[in-house]
Length: 419
Ligand code: PLP
Image (cartoon, rainbow, N blue to C red):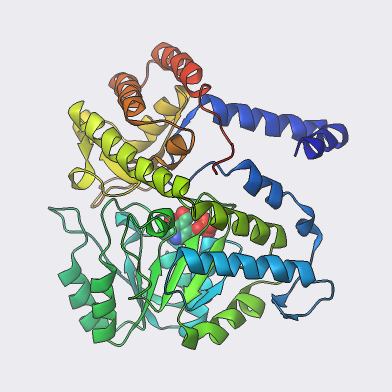
């Protein structure tokens, strides 16, 4: 790594300097973006390795290129390690370039243009790739949405079942980007079977929790499971699909040649490393810390008068409804950013505001937990958030807090060895 960095400095000091600035930013700030994490040095080394030079269209043992013996080895290793992390997985494809492409591959494997899909409303926690009108899924298929109950702000499974009976979707998608409660995959499985739909569980956000046994696994209940590898799983950026053996051929064909050409071999090697790290007791302890930190931060903010959507969290994230404080998500996001606290504005269920304004912020603890922050630190973070949001236009206050945040955050290493 050191060698590569100095080569970069010599060849392109401009980009080198930008990367250094980004490293300093990440190190000085507190990152509460629920979908981000800090991959280990080992993962980044594999990601920056000579595998970036290799073309390997096809799958291990069946490539369209020569010279694939080593990518075959590392891809098989990634598959085996993923299989061990997610018991019951029958077939695994580690090639999707992203979580969105993993979802597209599943849709292309089981749907015809115009088919109906039933997915979580994007305004209530679902993901763009599940059927946003501007996304391929929204253009090719006919999305129908389910959401959360207005009172409990939790998934309303009876309403999901009623929609499934009324619309007879060919595919049901469960899984979310902004939902803080346990998802009942077994119930989704029963609903899908009742209406003869294929079930896709998108565990992009909670994959690390599932691997650590802290969230029930969808594998016994879903035909397909998709994930990203860079969120709670703490690997390199990328996607993955797990499916039943009977869909294996169709899926592999939709990933290549359906959607992609050459796989990102360096990212496959890095995924293999991340899956090894995720099989350790240290990783399981880390996932427990993420969940404990999220619960503690939500409770600390609630104690300071913030309303937490659904009253709390079971996983790595939660939403804060800022309306009782008279704030919007974008104002809060900007004010906190000035103080070095990075969150994202987020629609809350039944949000009256537009997506670029929003009434809420989403807060997640994967990164702060990777950096070694624990329960007492969540109290300090809640204090800073409370202080900044009590006077969001006060730039002096923001820079005062920003200095405290930078001094604090710099004590926690950014990227390190986790095993
Ligand atoms: N699925 C869910 C539930 C997500 O939250 C995300 C990303 O935020 C994705 C899929 C897409 O992943 P990517 O950004 O790698 O396309």
